[in-house]
Length: 405
Ligand SMILES: [Fe+2]
Image (cartoon, rainbow, N blue to C red; front, side, top):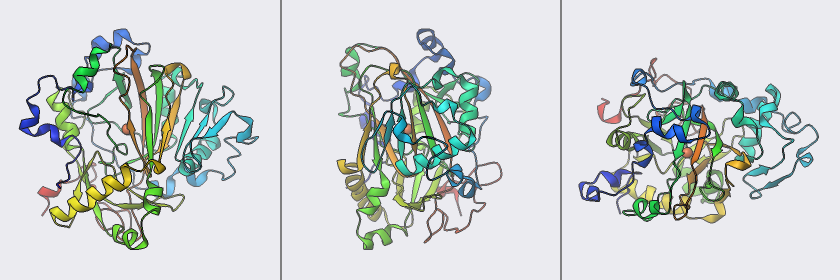
């Protein structure tokens, strides 16, 4: 069976016959009008004309050694001075995810050392859900500076953002009634989209911080997959084989959807980036399967049918096993949640499970920190270089494979 990259199905002419298809709903939002009806209009701004094509993707060549987790204390004494027991908390599973639901714990109050410990905490626990946070009311400049502690921030090519802060990515779905359900699912049985944020970038994300502004009281949760465990479950023979493989990631279909829906692009052009299928974490040294379903196009250097065979196996192995998964409940905007995770060894998807109900707005912003170029010890990075290298040109552009010599 052919492997279909995420969203690509939509561009088959035969699948574009349904006039009610809602696939470009996000980009169809008129931000100028929508922001009149939200609690935090500063986090919902249209892309300005002068921003079009202004940004290139960013490089981060020294991240492998600069990751703030290297500077964290393994006892987390700067994050939880009296131990995590001081705060009301629980683990989402023994391996993955911790929730802290305690007003006394505010990530906004962390000093530099506390922020370093938080990096190491996310690199071991994978994700954290912090409730009752004042973070959303600290303003965009505070959020930007908080994120920059961990590295350069990504500017998304085609998303909405906070006003004057293109680094603060906005997700928004307006208030609506049960009528949305029929429209949204008129031509699809599901709208989940497993991915690691911006894996199409040469230097994909280390951390994402997802900050709730407004959200329905239940539903719209984020589900996570532990790619370390997906790697560990494989036999040594397949683990070794997979360590030799390189996979092409791209935002080409995301860009097509944006264009189809009339959303201007801050970064022009499509990225086709090679990353190893198995990557090593720069701080913990743990291996994981870098299988970002939504952006993966094919395995490089093997035949089409062989690529299909490998990727279809990974779809089944990685995405269908509930033993690798945890669910971060959003519990609405009033829980004042900040959900933070390490994109290097997690996949996640939103869940669109609330459309049969009348709900208010769903509005979040995300800080997306750039990490290192993915690598492993067998093939190095996606170009086979064992050291950080310069395949990314000075201006941050890379060449699509079809145009390479
Ligand atoms: Fe995401």
